[in-house]
Length: 388
Image (cartoon, rainbow, N blue to C red):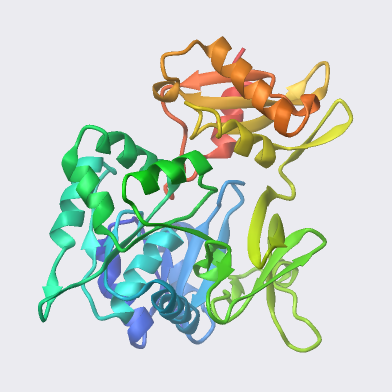
């Protein structure tokens, strides 16, 4: 089966081809690649493949994830079984798995998705959301969308002064939030604004979110092996195109034939719900003590004005390694950089210990982000390394 490369994120270009790939005979789509730079148009993919998603995540290491028609469809049907069926608004890049799944859910439900094109703006989102509202046989059609935390924070900020944005947030039956952890303060703020939030966890390798509010979707298995979260079920990718060694490492198979995906995330199951504790490898050694940067970041984001902050590790002459907070100036609440750092260090010391306290706070005009909306941690590390 041949792979048809699709360059760009325009859903108007992707949707017709995706319809043929998911509901028809193909060809399979190669998202985020071009035939010129990868030779993809001459590449064979496994039978049943719908999409190959090229993603580097936050590590900068490219991966080409093979997703079958059955995996994408299973994910869409399981989502509908959990939160309901209705109309979807696309507010994420269509080449990112969460955006791709908005289109797949629409195709499976035989509904035309709402499309938000261009840079994300709260007023444009509100207009598109309110235009999506409709009724069938006298009953309102439920509406849904999928966002990353940074988008939700922008909408909440705008909603303080814009009634149309407030109305848009309340109009959705559910707003899926994924891509990274949602700070508890932001969740509380969203719920106070009337938004119905569902926190999702998953990866491109699981066809997007497959655990909602800590509970796996129907058919999805979760286990903890050596502190690592592993996932199974019908939504798993076939593997990585042209990389059997990486596929074997990431997708082990049990003797009983159950196939799992190794997420690389630390987690635990608490009272039947999955709690993700961050990346297993996102750890620095500061003064001889291991410090989880994900854990530090979660605490820092609980501090007022630092809800979107990113914490990265840097070399340190005294401690070997140290953590640095990078935050947007607009969130600083007109307090001094020194005050913000003091509050963050105090919160981290109280929650984790003095050894984990961040060494610096760097304010920037805008946090570097990947097309998916996740923080671009490699770019942020380079910025910090060059900051004196």
